[in-house]
Amino acid sequence: MLTRDKNEKKILDVDAGMQGTLTFKDPVTLRINGSFEGKLDTKGSLIISENASVRADITGDEIVVGGKLTGNIVAADSLRVLSTAHIAGDITTPSLSVEKGAVIHGKCQMLIGNGSKGNILNIEELAKYLEVEVSNILEWANSGKIPAFKEGNDWKFERPKIEEWIAKEKTK
Image (cartoon, rainbow, N blue to C red; front, side, top):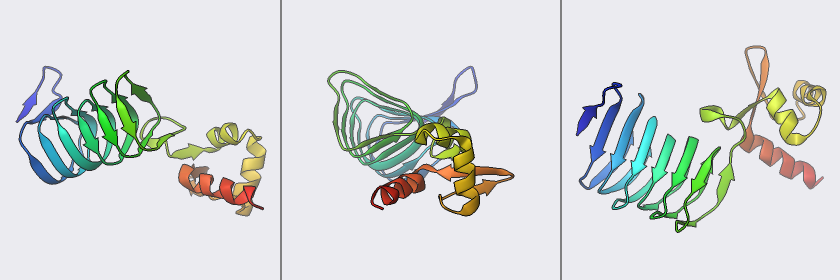
């Protein structure tokens, strides 16, 4: 059922069992109360209620888990794990809140940077993260010593590629 609250937020409440891929291009509040199996790619808020059972890899902005979830989670803004939650899968998010009693089986990676661009770093964020001068990062980027790409006139860095680069540099 799709409803709108007084602030014109789109709310989709799913009480039935569903299977497949759900993708939202516009922000919506999706609340799953039943079962879902497949893939979820959401914008806005995703709420997996206490009685829900979900087997899916999830990508979203703000995610709240209160039920049973088997699958990986990538939350661009935040992930809140309620005391009734049971998660079996890896978590990637810049902001994580876990209530006492929640169960998580998997790895957790905290993003640096903010919001949905948490995996893309600017030169200042990377310098702070690596604890080096901005001039060093600029030199490495210009010479191709560090994985980077240009967005306009600015250097940008993908966190997973930087992590791989750090691991390779440590073995030299």
